[in-house]
Image (tube, rainbow, N blue to C red; front, side, top):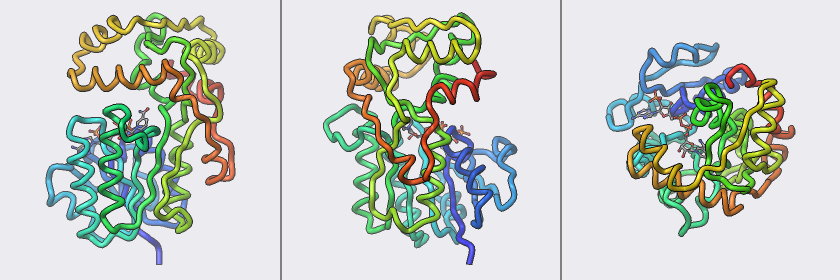
Length: 287
Ligand SMILES: NC(=O)c1ccc[n+]([C@@H]2O[C@H](COP(=O)([O-])OP(=O)(O)OC[C@H]3O[C@@H](n4cnc5c(N)ncnc54)[C@H](OP(=O)(O)O)[C@@H]3O)[C@@H](O)[C@H]2O)c1
């Protein structure tokens, strides 16, 4: 019998790729969207949309009913631990057989940064839940250069980040989705944590060079002093908790702690992950 797989956060960077790829496989896909209107571009064969508001238990109950497996994506919000635990409780109550959790690289370093500690708290809750699980720990997404750092690239050909000469093993969200799809359609990865990175680690200067080559424009990497980076995020109306969390993340990248490269994508999917250059050429119109 075909399994039903629920993806929460299905309109997000990773979620929408997972839905798209799973729609070609022999499964029923339930795309959990915050609002049905936003899910318009997820209307593939085998995909049904369901509206989920994480804080409304009745919406979780409806979404989880009849589900075999779930890919659990939660937003980067201050209440992400609470949301994560609500979803795990709902999965347990519904008798879901396998929960795949999108976490983050570095979560295993329990005394690490705030974002990692939050992810680890949810991971532990899942590990202790008695549910069968797989945890995905991806590095920073290549797509951040379109979604979050893209404005200054599009408007004045500059990337402003306090990364110094630190290298980061950026991963293409499409590769995370490929790994997720393999994991969601297999029983080989039960109760494991998979650390997923891109195939190389790059400095900000190398990132700028790759975007320059793909766009034909000269893109400059500007290593912003930490005070200026903090001030810039405040001016963008980011709340204090997020500014502090992002600064911690940038600091570990600058110190070279986000440069580890793994071959998880190839091992799990059978193909190599996209390089940053591949990504830039395929997303050139977005810069
Ligand atoms: N970005 C990175 O480099 C990176 C790296 C490693 C790990 N991660 C982790 O990946 C996860 C997802 O990141 P992402 O960039 O894919 O986020 P995203 O694209 O913003 O996805 C979050 C999804 O959650 C939905 N959502 C938000 N609030 C909701 C609510 N109250 N009820 C129901 N749905 C809600 C959003 O829908 P709406 O937009 O419609 O609200 C969106 O579909 C986070 O846990 C993050 O820590 C990110």
